Image (cartoon, rainbow, N blue to C red):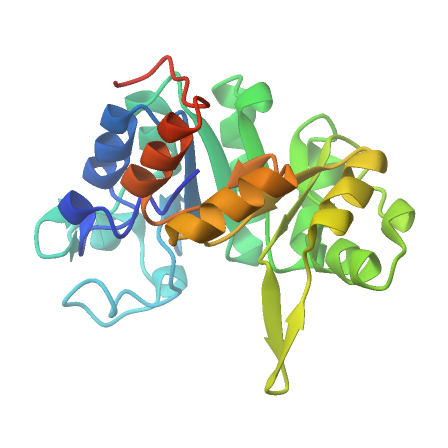
Length: 248
């Protein structure tokens, strides 16, 4: 999966989560695109990582406090507009999207958009908020969702089978996570096997080092989220695993 469209791809530096960034990864052959979703003050959904515009634009302002018209005037990297979720579906009708719900106000609008585009089978929805994931599941029980932080915590203590997303489910986790200054390993080859035995898939983020990619593939993970889609493609090609109906 191309994280934020492939944020560290040379052509994408400074323009993460824009139509241009996603197009560059699609041109590489990527069918799976990861992005983040915020809601504007008037209820429109935009693909943007932070709640505030400042990090990647020259504008200071919270998306949740601005109408879509104001957000549309902002440029990422001084040149690319911030896309709406509808524009993503329109621009890339064959792509599959992983949406990270970054705001509580994005849950219901995303469900409506997915229905409108009949995209139930080509999206996966996750969040660091278990409440948002649960709300989305109730609205669209047939859509694949991440098990969420509660599910990851259950896995970490050996209770994988207690995770019941109510529909297709996937663990989307880093290999390790820091808690109170202590680095805790969340994923091992044995845990990947255990997750698979429980009927779930495994997506790992965010992996930008070649050796780490090889290791995770050896472990049998189902997906790798990366800022370096060019590098991951090289790894998959070298292993005879690259196949795409998009791009090259």
